[in-house]
Length: 104
Image (cartoon, rainbow, N blue to C red; front, top):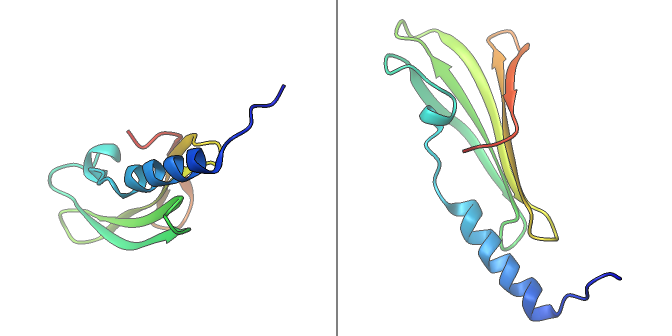
């Protein structure tokens, strides 16, 4: 038997989801960026009101200033309130190098 969700439960989940998606992440730690490299936020986008999904794009530069890698990461809350997140690392020519299905 499927559980019925009352409107106030959905609103509560949306409010909580919105807060969770706005929390800051330490992307240098998540992506294992060396201290001698620089990580630059290129773009971030949110979807929904309140936000139910956020995506980020970062570029990593080496100590010599050259592009080392590009990252795409996301965090979203499903309609059932389940948190999903992950990231993908691409080399400077766009080939997938690694991925992780968790932002923590």
